[in-house]
Image 1: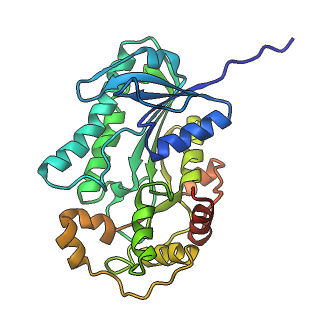
Image 2: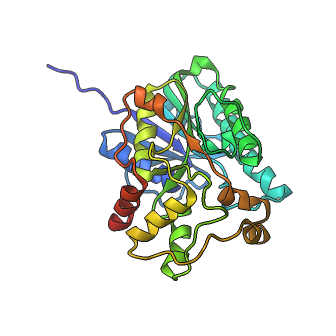
Image 3: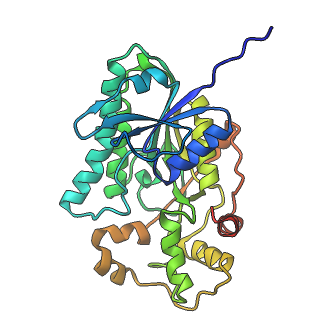
Amino acid sequence: MTEIQPKKRILISGGSGLLGRAISELALKSGFEAGWLSRDRNYPAPKDIRLFGWNPASGTMDTTALEWADIVINLAGKSIGETPWNRQGKRDITESRLQAVATLVKGLEKTQKKLDSFIGVSGSGIYGPGNQPYKESEPPGKGFPAQVAALWENAYSEIPPAHYHKLCILRLGVVLSTRGGAMPKIMQPIRWGVGAALGSGKQGFNWIHIEDAARGFLAAREWSGVFNLSAPGTADNRQATLAIAKAMGRKIFFPPVPAFFLELALGERARLLTEGNYSDVSEISRLGFTFLHPDIKEAAAHLIRNQI
């Protein structure tokens, strides 16, 4: 008689966010069990999600979560796009990332558990601005996003090798979804008839469809090392804006919004909009990962048509 193998269990920090929910949904459909680390044990999570308590600010967590898990995916951290880049905001963004990883490290050190895989998120902003495709071997670039990502990745190196079989860090591009993140902010002015590219419009728009992002994180349980996770089809800011407008059945009439006006409104954080880059994803392609949505025009149309 064939022995039935137990389901693998995926524990996600930041699971209630846009990407965390997409990964959780895909994991459950793919035959995994899924759990979230949450500051609120009474959080209204979907019925099939198991909740475990933690508080990265105080460095505490329910270590039974790690005993339960086979795979840990860390997505925790304040949004770099939503948080002001003043002194306190930068501190909050940085500390939220480092505290989350430190809490997981401390939790693992209190257990005898050896995870199948630990998967940590990082950002494509680590390369700084530039219009050539960056490979994973490139050193960190300049600017606040690059600084934060470099510190984040260094924090993952503190995870004791005795507590995992595989450690993977994914340098994630901008996740596109109509349900949150950057895309609704692009869609809103287009819907009002005042849509426009930003800055020069020629800056790289390092993007990925949310379905491919979720698939990438599940595939990463078999990978070791640092990898870019962005769509292979490159697009600059203007091309991405036009693709989204076309998918909405709208046209863009206005010239690009000058960087000066964006800086007046957002300060230094405007650089997220006026600067960009591209990621070379040949390494994950070599590992066998294929994209369902490699082209920005098709991806935008699919997202908007299906309200994903």
